[in-house]
Image 1 (cartoon, rainbow, N blue to C red):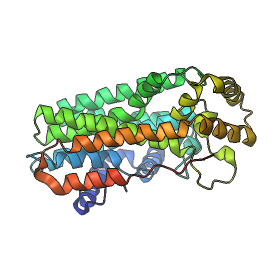
Image 2: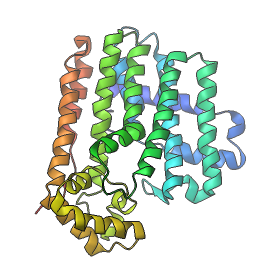
Image 3: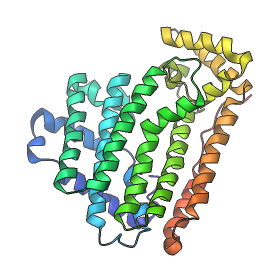
Image 4: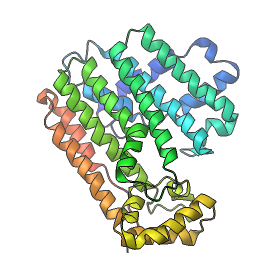
Length: 334
């Protein structure tokens, strides 16, 4: 996993996993509910968000004395993320996630909706029960941001005049808001000053943008996936990401791009159409511009890391090293 190059963080993430299991009521672990919750827990991702929270917390003076509280908040952030993925898969009608059947594919859409809602209700209960008011408000705002991001993205599907501002607004809600929140919670709960907490939030902002743009680029990567239609899924589903937006901004590419978007809307894109999409983006330098944008966000993160308290050089140097080495996917070229 990206952030577990710091050995002690692996141990701490294991505590987060244990805390997540302890947060599940016993009566959730039997019957159909138990099957679904077990599947949800087994489909956990790479733990990027808990890792970020704990890494930022390590820079605060009260990290060790507030560790259990930090583990709890890391667990809550991960639960919210997991619930959002369940709901995303329902909306997208996704059959697989990371190569495994989604909750909605295994149990049906109704069950998946209830499972996601059940997890969110438990996070609310624990925020109130454990008096996590300030950090809980940040998490609640993030849930709102996620919902607004998904609503706005749905409104922008197949919209050939979608703007960069709309794109950024959408991905802020979908992805970046949680990055901002976990970075802020890490600083807040470990006793950092308000100025440092705000700076950590800005680091989360640019890191969230970097991760989402990188994820968008992966949809165009040259990994061997056989049938070309198993790639370009964002475009096929009408989600127009930066490489496409940059291409649509140039008048000479607008008509052929509009034709491809209409074919995507109608579900009749062929492999040849997807190859044409790549060629148009390459001619418009859409991939190059998107990579530069991702690199600009990475540079902002690296610059801001230098402004954080330097008492934990080991942690800061590791984060900087990992961010510097975060590779962008190999993309089609002329």
